[in-house]
Picture 1: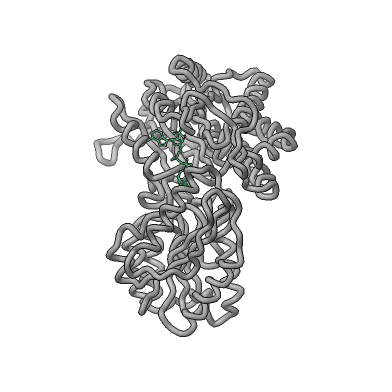
Picture 2: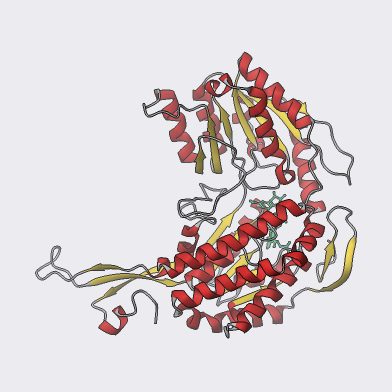
Amino acid sequence: MTDTSTLQSIDARTGQPSGESWAASTPAAIAATVAAASEASAVWAASDGATRARLLRGLASALEAAREQLVPLADRETALGTARLNGELVRTAFQLRGFADVVEQGAAFAVQDDAAVAGAPPVGRPRLTLVRVPLGPVAMFAASNFPFAFSVLGGDTASALAAGCPVVVKGHPAHPALSRMTIALAQRVLADQDLPAGLIGFVEGAAIATGVQLVQAESIAAVAFTGSFFGGTALAKVASDRPRPIPFFGELGSVNPVIVLPQALRSDVTELAQTLAGSICQGSGQFCTSPGVIIVQKDVAGDAFVNALATQLSSLSPHAMLTPGIRRAFDKGTRHWRETSGVRPLVADVAESGSTPRPCLVEVDTTTFVSDTSLHDEVFGSAAIVVRTDASSQAVEVLHAIGGSLTVTLWGVDAGTSAPDADTLALVRAAAQAAGRVLFAGVPTGVAVTAAQHHGGPFPASTAPATTSVGYAALDRFLRPVALQDAPAWLLDRDGVPC
Ligand code: NAP
C-alpha cells in the first residue's frame, strides 16, 4: 500500500481492491480517541468483576452473533480459509469468556495482607497490604495473521479489559474492513451496557506515524504488540524514549526449534514427517509458533526422516499469504537461504511471483548454522531449515545460538518416571532457557488458552520475557503492585478494587 493516507480492503487471493477506500485516522482523531480512553480509565479501574465479566461476555456473544458477516469478510481479506477463521472466532469468544470467568473469580483483585507485628524492626512491622492497580489505557497493535484472536477483540484487548484498563486498538491495515466491522460491534455492546465508548477505542492507518503518535500519547500507559522484529523494536524504542517511558509487551517472532532425538525415529518416520510438514504449512506458515528450525542427528534414521519430511512438504500447497509485503519477505528470506554457502536445498522449487508460495526446506550442518547469525532469523511462512548434528550436545549449541523462541519441541525424551541421562537433562535445561513453552509431544502450532499457558520467552520471542500474551496470566501485564501501609479500613474493605 503506497498511499498511506487512505485504507483499502484488498482481496488477499487476487490482490484486487474491494469496495471504496476511506481516510486513515487523523492526528486529531487519534488524540480524541486517546482522550476518551483516558476519561474512561478511572471508572473502569474501579469497576467490579461482575461489570467487567458482563462486558467480556457481551463481546463474545456479539462476535458469535455476527459470524456470518465476519468470517467471509475475514476470509476475503486474509485468505486464511473459512474453516480456520471459524475456529479462530470460536477461540476468540472462548478467551473473552475465559477472562470473564477469571476476573469474576477475583484474579485482578488478589490481595496479600501482612498483619502488623509489634516491636522493633526487622521483626516488628506495620500492616502491609499488597494490591494491584490497572496501569491505564493500553495501546494495542493488532496482528496481521490472527484477524480475530490477536486483533480488535483478541487476547490483548480481553486481558487489558479484564485487568481494568481501557484499550486503544491500532487496526492492522491487512484486514481493515474486518477491523471496522468488529469495532462497530464492540461499540454497540458498550452502548447497550451503558459503558463509555472510550473503553475500546480504535485508530487506523497504514502509515508508521499512526502507531508512533499512539505510543507517544501522554495518557497511554502500556503497549501490547504482535508483529515483526523491525516494527516491534522500532515501537519499543518509541515507548522507551518518551519523557515518561512505558512498558512495551512485544511478541516479535520466533523460529520454534523442533529437536528430533534418535529415540523418536524408532516409530513410523513417515507419520512424524507428515505431522511436521502439516505444521510447517498450516496457515501458509503464518503462525508465530510455526516450526522453522528442525534439529536432526546425522545418521541413517535421521536421513530417512529428513527425506520423508522433504517428500511430505513437496506434496503440500500452502495458500496465498496475507499481504504482498509478507510474501516479499518470505521470498527474500528463502532466497537468502538458497544463496548461502553451505546450505543445501531439499525442497526449493520457487513459485512464480503473484501465485501462492511453495514450501521451502533446506539443510545445513551445525557449524555453519551456529556461525552464520543470518540463518537464525525467522522466515515467516512455510519454510524450515534442517540442522544436522553429530550428538545431542550439538543440539544444545544450536539452541544457544538461536537465543529466544516462543517454543522448543523435544521429540524422543523418555515419557517415563526415571530421570534421563545427563545429555538429555542438558537438552531439556537448554530448551527451558531458550523458550517460554517446551513441548515433549506434538507440534508447536496451536496455543491453548489456559491458566498454565505461557506464550512468550527470551528476546526476540518477547520484549518482556516474564510475561505471556496468551492464557489468563496475560492480565498480569496490565496491573501494577501497590503496597498499602497502615491503610484505612474503608480502603481495605474494597478487597483489591482500586478506589
Ligand atoms: P509489522 O510490519 O510489524 O506490522 C505490525 C504493526 O506494527 C502494524 O500496525 C504496523 O503499522 C506497525 N509498524 C510496523 N513497523 C512500524 C514502525 N517502524 N513504527 C511504527 N509502527 C510500525 O507486521 P506485519 O505487517 O503483520 O507482518 C510483517 C512481518 O511481521 C512478517 O513478515 C513477519 O515476519 C512478522 N510477523 C510476526 C508475527 C508474530 O507472531 N510474531 C505475526 C505477524 C507478522 P502499519 O502497517 O500501519 O505500518
